Length: 139
Image (spheres, helix red, strand yellow):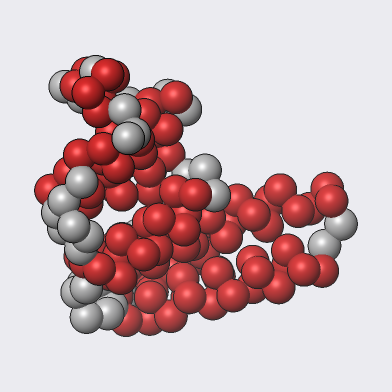
């Protein structure tokens, strides 16, 4: 469901349909939650990975208005959930939101925190060396 939703959103191998894509991404997140509640430990990791990706992509949909009304505040909400679950793309996007004050109040300390988390997973962004300065440590 997740991959079909992404394919629909971008028109990869099918006609693009952002509204239907958003619905598939929502369903993918719902099914991943159900899977987390019903699967063995071995399958748990895969279900969690799909859930995190689906939550992140819902945030991307809200940020760009793909299949849903554009809403940066809601996008940040989804980015925060996925970021707290460890997704480095969500961490970078949430940091971007904090740095630029898009959907959340501008907060360079929170931006540095989430950029650092993403960088620790190998998803650093060129030109972000400022995040490692002591003055951007959490207060």
